[in-house]
Length: 267
Ligand code: SAM
Image 1 (cartoon, rainbow, N blue to C red):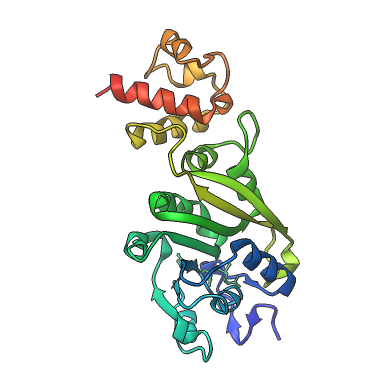
Image 2 (cartoon, rainbow, N blue to C red; image 1 turned 120 degrees about the vertical axis):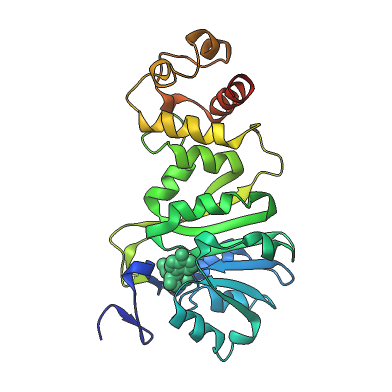
């Protein structure tokens, strides 16, 4: 049988379908999630149910969001899992997670489709205040970016926005052989725990997004040159930001203080 056919389903590349096929890894992920009955668990991209099945063994109910119509139908009619699942056949990137949060703080997990994982995470961050925690399988490189520190190559817009909202904890590394079909890249599982109180809140999120975008789109420029149309060297210095460094050396606290200064001083 073709490597692309798994449990009678032909994997669809456009939906980022790489199905988990290693009981040891599946067990490790479910232990990391540690689902408890009564919790409001939501899985993104349940697929053929590799994570769904062991999680439903531990809880009474699970919401799942699956884009593939065939897989959504398969899950609905599953003999054991079906009755515990509410299957939302939908695009998770446009899904209103706030609707599900009415049932309690969300515990979101999933082996995410890698082709959309970054925009999907940005969508999820907008619900961070309604989320207890999230566990995601991602490309290892993306987990490295989420967890990176200033001054490193992996540090970027995704790092700053993720750490603005969440504590980032890498959990487990996963080789390509754990999936069917095997992806070309290494994977890793990460736990994201939204801060109860934001450590560096901004008054206007769009300024934080703008300084991150401009800072990381021009990595080779100095901070002074990168932001020269927005802020003077004196102000940068007053904010405790060294204008001669590159934006990738700015901490989350510095990005936030620059965003707050801009919000207070620009219309
Ligand atoms: N959870 C399964 C597993 O671990 O074997 C499948 C993981 S597979 C990497 C990604 C899953 O996400 C697939 O089932 C795919 O159909 C689904 N998917 C892809 N894009 C999606 C989207 N935008 N919204 C919801 N589900 C999506």
